[in-house]
Image 1 (cartoon, rainbow, N blue to C red):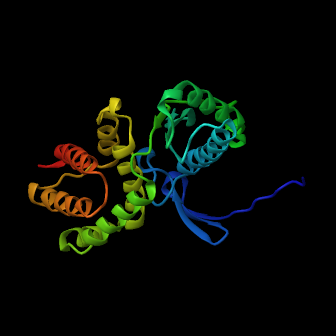
Image 2 (cartoon, rainbow, N blue to C red):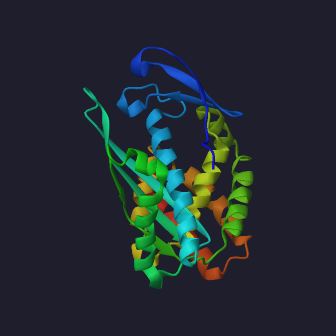
Length: 262
């Protein structure tokens, strides 16, 4: 097989972390700048985002292929990739990169085999191997969940919910003022709700609470929370999910909303 080549075009202006640029990859145009929490402008993606995304996407494809090769049940994999940067004021470097895979449509009774496959994927992902000598690159928590509700049905739920949400004056104005990309919100919600429905019940809601609190710094009023939950409840009731799933999902949603109500 002949060698493959890849090309991207970049334009940058500004000094150091106060600069920003644009990346052209094929037909895609991406804004890029230093991350806000490291003194950058926080516009678009950061080089740090791009690096861990490259590792995570390569790892996810490798893991899915290995699971299929090993004959382990799988319908979808979701990867939460996290990293730590040290020495930000002097010689910044990645000190650690963790991939936390969640396997949907798996067999929890085969947990050990899934964990072995997750480690094998780390060893075989060539982008991960490229950085392994410079970064503490590891597999974190491996979750194996049965598929209670198919992802396609969850996708429909999220699409229907946001179709209602954007018609509400408060939320539509808020999205416009903050420049919120609703499609990004929908994709996050698809993954999040899938974890709430198809997640391991022994995990409880703790990891979900941590994710929500890490991602959102906002607060809301009881009235706005009631509107959000009301629209979600209305949409959930319209699905053909099992009644126990509907009740459990709305109970979890209500609990996760509480810390943000002021």
